[in-house]
Every structure is written in structure tokens, then in C-alpha cells.
Length: 140
Image (cartoon, rainbow, N blue to C red):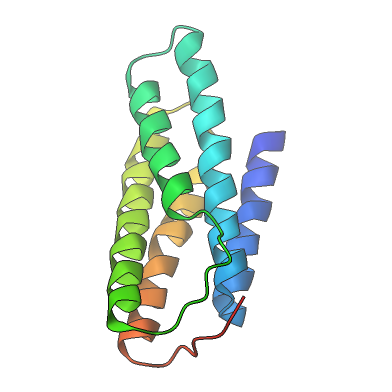
């Protein structure tokens, strides 16, 4: 298994850990680093003469990295913060659903399809927990 795939798997597990423990910092950290990993690999592909889809991949995953930057801002549970969280997690979910299809076009191993599918579903779980009031808001 290629080293980038192993790193991507570890980063997915970091996000999964954050999801299970309901720890926003680790959840966001895994997504942010995954975005940077994929963007850096895709920019190298593009610079080495790959098709323009590599440039689109770079753009999409830089957006994910920016949205999921693991800041230490206190989350007070206000309606505005909750609304922003829902929008951010919906966006990240869409990025990873797009990545499922991009994975079929890339030379990456097929396991990346499954990693992106898991990364696309987890934010939907967070949205459900936020809307149902089942996630306790705590400081980082």
C-alpha cells in the first residue's frame, strides 16, 4: 500500500476518533490535514502535466482544509454558531462525495473511494447530532 494512502487512512481515523469522542478539534484536524495532503499530491500531478481535473481537485481540497482548520474558538452553542457548523459540515460532506467520483478518475488506489465515502458520511452524522441536540457543546 502506498505511503500517502496509509497517511490518508490514519488521518481518516483521527477524524473518526473525533467523531466518536465528539471532540471537534480532532474531527476537524483529520479533515484539514487530509485536505492538505490531497491538495499537495494533486498540485504535483498538475505540475507534472496531468489533466486540469487535478487543478480542480487542488481547489476543492484547499477549500476543505480552510473550512476544517482546527481552531480553538469556544463554541457557545448559539444559533449562529450552530447554523455555521451545519453549513460547514454540509460543504465538507459535498467535497468528499465529489471526491468519491474523482477517485475513480485518478490513479489512486481504490481504497481512496471508501475513505472519501466515510469522510462524506461522518459530517452528516455530526449535523444529525447537532440538530437533534445530542451533541454536548464543550470547550476544546
